[in-house]
Image 1 (cartoon, rainbow, N blue to C red):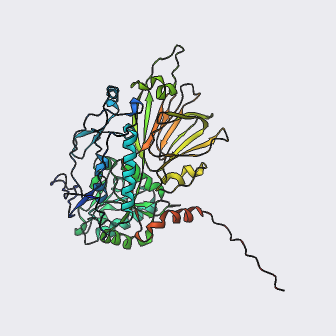
Image 2: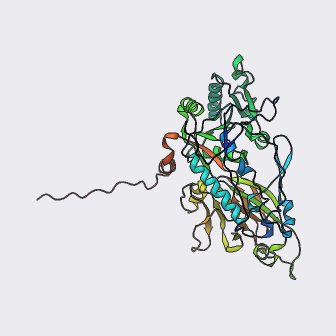
Length: 489
């Protein structure tokens, strides 16, 4: 197995959270590694006060280390220390924007959203994740896999058969694998959970996961096996909003930008991955937060101004908006007109600058990973996932001059519905959690502290993205031009 670079810091072996908890995962690794990311206050960029947090020190978390290699490497990213940043009186109004984060032991901590970081901190965070991604792409991670999470479409009979086949294969192995499948399969006749557990060696090894378990105890699982298409991988990203186990995706869908392994060879793939190690591609996710307008009368005519509230004279007012839900997304955040018959009116801001006013069916803010999804269909650019960018593309813009734009991923992008808009707009996050944005509401988009680790085939990791767009899109594929044939005298 390849060794890690010297810049990785060693951490002690992890232990289960509760020795008596059957779901806890014991650690048998000799060492674990963590990437250290340090934030300082040099060159800190001041933003609107509602985007800058109070600098009270966060309470220490009570989570224990696990034997998941990627979890440990991202440990520092999940526990950002903001004590070095400047604390000003205007930060006091932001404490309400900190959201409770349930630890596995049931204690609450305060999770600082990435939109609340300064420009310097977001830059350092995104740079640290990219540097970690580069190192992970050239090494093989050998994990002590014990708890295997299987994810598929539980309403598709064909995929239920595939799920049962993989679960049965895992339960028959000599290794002490514990297999988790969706709770809806507990009484499914096709899956036949009781039949899988008839053998004495399989009893107690088949368990059932719920959405609540994924949200509260994601470190329980060592690896995720996704059986389906790209939508199944996006579902994994939705289930694991913070800590994401490495996702090994088998292609059983239509396209397969994110599904890298052939299902027919799953026994050899799993044997090699569990015994010889895996290669991980770390995909940067975006964090989107819905900000609701506080109903109030401001001007003489009774109308508020979104531009003034976000970057104008009222930008220092901490009580113009309040957060109403945060989502980490892998593909895109889309604002559209929904069921309304007219166009959407959307104001777009980047940090403290008003970019433009959009009249269109909507806009798509995509990650580099999501560049081949809705962004591409809307006319946006193809983008390699290693690029540190944010893609903004209009959906059927009313002006021909609105061209797709590529922005750095270190900004906080805000897109909102102006107060004088004729209709509301709708926001969706990776096609889920669709919510209505009323006039005065907006959505913030920023780089997330919780990236998405996708397992790659080790033998073709360097050319994986080009292969995927050539295979799925027939990129630049055409009949070859005929050569000249010289006339012989």
